[in-house]
Length: 333
Length: 304
Image: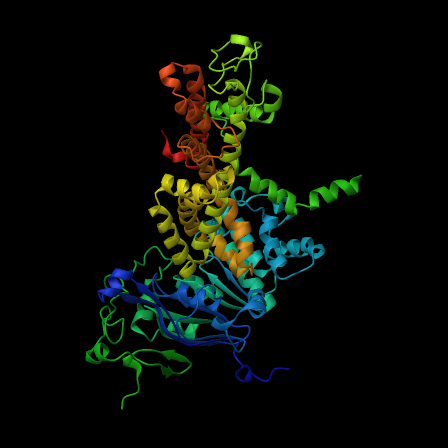
């Protein structure tokens, strides 16, 4: 049927998307001291239907903000966020309702993502009610969604409250709610970071399998390269609101091009007792996002920065099958 | 039979949800003071409900002795008047009993209106933010700037002195405290992950407010409502005492005004003005005991 992915229009498209937050109140604004935090500052990428992409970066790099823009929990303050050819920020009324049933978010913290006053049945029925699915079908859809996330003996959970379930079970419920309307696009925001290590693999496998089975387009947000590598074919690395590198996960792991990606890859612990952990080649923490460095925002931590980095922000450079934002890789002129 | 059972299990919907919402309103039975307050309220409620049966006379009826003289300034016990009579020959005990009716009527309606307006304003301002928040909170600032008693007096005098105008005047001013507190509570709820999750699940603003915000705000509305009861009764008493009250309905404040105007103190008619004064103190304190109990349920960490 399909003759090559390249001809398909992308399902999700970000074009120089920005999410800026004003900092400081009325007084600061009058004094001219008010600034903006550029949580997301000109991010451009496309997702093809059925792709699973990891969004990688340390905390504060804008990966969660990007996710929130994609599901329209926040409206982009600049640029465009498109889903299936439509501008997401402009959706209202019925169009927004349809969008809500096609795009879902899996929350990071399952202990907070469920209303403590709702039973599991109420939690899972909420999206069904909103999508106007007849009440008679609810029971069956709920059971099916719970089977999908491998919560055996679903009937036992139906009338319990969130506080009566374990973290792993709760995260499966959160996933079941995201999947119950059979969405086309799911953003998973560090879905296992709040879970006990012993149950992470199970939850992660559920996510990976369901995504592959149903052909869901997914973004997996994480700060952990190992997890992204396990779930996603393609990885986008972000730093301080911008993309630094974008390409197939295996290539990025095998041969990181951007100095920041190189640092991330070096930081992955090696599961061998004799091999000691290599020190991070980059120093200190991330700079103050209210006052980022000029030019390339990574230059003050970059071991290979040179004069030009302070002057000019690097644009996208295409290296083989990857996009890198770094002056080191720009073609010499 | 078995059909009925399964349908009962399968219909968790509205009834269960309502029960859970109302379940957040618990009576503060763990605190002895609150229990005393509840008992006092129960006593007054019974008194108000059965006023026509308890009171031996119409509170406004001018009574005469068996010698056809005005039954004025009789001391307690004489001629079967339990608490004696006023200078105009009215039965004080009957006035006390009927006074409970207007006290509760005013207290409860004012509290209800205050809690209702305050909750709606607070939720709308907190949830929607932006200009709705700005407009409503500046209105609250204005309400905070209005001196309470003078405003109620002016309004009650401007319209006509009736119980309902006193209630309206109080509602127009007292919603400010409830509104502010409910707003801040809503602000913390609005950004909870489960509210955002509901939004991603496609719930409309109205649905999120009714299902996720309101149940968490309701106990707080209740607390502020119970505080408003005391305020309302006290205010009505003040206004009646100052002579701006409803002349047609007997309230404890009106009784104090009547006693004051008839120079009951210089006549030494303690039986006339001590009981209404005492009952005002009693019912207002009872209201505060109950709200204290609520406070403990809502903020268990306060730990007094």
